[in-house]
Image (cartoon, rainbow, N blue to C red; front, side, top):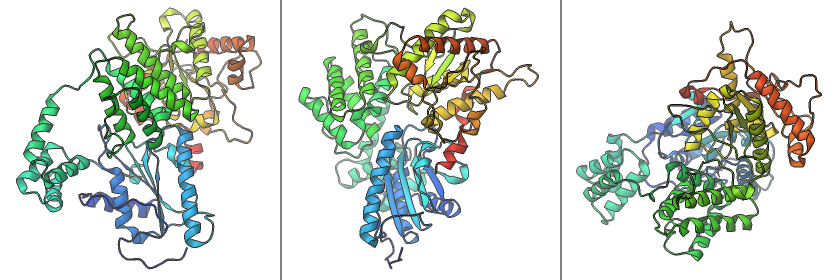
Length: 570
């Protein structure tokens, strides 16, 4: 690439970097630290503090870095990953943005974008939900890669920059310099918002415009802190969390267009539910969903919930995908309405939708820890996707029914289905509790299983638990019984971690099944029955050897499995 002369702060000709954020930026030390780490490493992760309820400006820092260090790069391109957790949708986002980059490259230089990237190129992968999973989308070559996320995954600390709250002194200084506020006003706002950049800058702009005083803002915020959250009486937090998780994973939150059509469908059906500023304000998709759910749960008429489910189904049918999530939204709404009428017990987050009910009982999830804990005997782990969701649930139910008959009562009879988990929600705590206590992991193996962050974590936790067994024990416990749900294609390289455990199912002289178990489930019949019986025999046999639990706080610290496959995918 030829190197044109540019003025300081002028972006390179091939760039889609948004304009520099408002002058209230600060973060001089973090931006300088980011540049130093990008000098020493090819990839750097800019992330929020662990366990904080909201972000502290990682995207703004990445954009500011691109503008401040523009002369170091001859190409800067931003990929907005939109907090997408579905691998197929994420790949589609990256692919579309890569096509735009290719068009801009060829238009600017008159030649196609081909071959490895250069060291003076900067790629920014913004709003990444799973930092480990994004690696497979990195291009070949030496381009510097900057990732922003609320999570750290298993990234090396040397390749990470944490963006926490602004310090009080820095907040006061920047408010005085950029918003023309006096010392007292600046101090009021700095103390009110606890160092959150976006809240501070919006409040500063409002004060500067004369719409409100700093004292009035502080008073209103203090009142809001004291007020209880507005929730409809009788709506458990777990139900709201479940509904929020499903909406974010559904077709209605795929992008701004789908969300716009969804909210318009709501407005056609009723009035007064959808706030008019949801689409025009500077909100993430998760924030939009939170505002919408607040509005829905504030309604006195329970029909608002039914309208919500109707609108989700309308957009789902229009897009042709996401039917599983739409059905789950409908199920949650139906159970909530029934519960409010007093006709049923409180809904179970992972209960099966009535429309999909079969002759078997629905899968049971792990209850919240209580004084008398009932741990799941087995844990079905899989790469969540709509295409085979029904078959996975049916297979899990078959295992539960067979286990209930064959397993001694003292070992418990519950199963846990890793279904529709979303990091950062209550589902995560349920999953952590289940994987650290379960006796058997039944992973449904597909090629993409080995690249899914939670699948990798579940596998790694069970390996760690086996490793924690006293070395003097005569027999290592068997805790992982893989099921080849869809066998990897010919020529695919087996991860080293997997090779040690892929033959753990004991067939007791029977010929092992060498096809796709998904085909057995789809066809049903006697071959499926025989397979389930053989698998449960192996599970019960393995349970004769105890397996220690893992401390809850260690679950998220265990290094993810299958590192060789994920590192080579770059």
